Image (cartoon, rainbow, N blue to C red; front, side):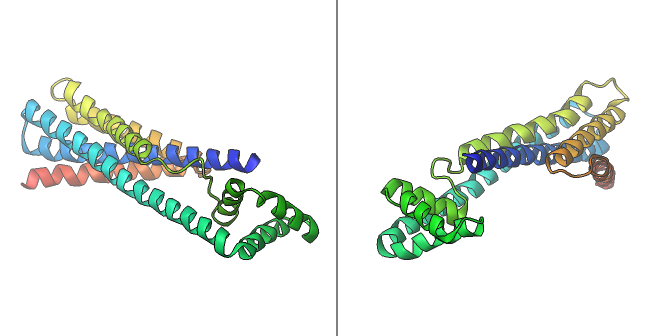
Length: 228
């Protein structure tokens, strides 16, 4: 039960980290387009449409990529389960040996480990779940969900990109660039802080790193717009 809870917690934290990174990508992608277009034209509607189009493209692109990636992982998980189901029927002794060694590695006495393995592998459904858990740290009842991953990526990227888009759109005339810079710096500092907290890193270092990347991104894209 404890192992299952830990696994679910790890999956939840990984989903949160992916969401934070997706939001960060959305922020930088959208502000890059906004600054390039704003440097090339002063037409507010053109800037807004460019930013909105990029926000949607970024969100759906990341969502599609995440769906494809997680679908591939899910297919791999199912293939592994199918292989283990076959091995239980053809090489039961080897599968049992994996379970015994797993518990021995945890400090369980050999005879006790044998008894545990015998009990866990006595039933077909339980045997498959046990072997998959022992060998691959997988839970048969919690396959990766590509739709959930895709939706999470879509929402996080769009949520990040909305910060610079709203700042550029609703800031007073003549203050759009400054307002967008401030919005981006606050947003990337926040994603840096959250990613560090979720990954047990140093928040200050992560925030400074994200702010520097944000400044470089805006600088490069602004002067690309000026050149062309």
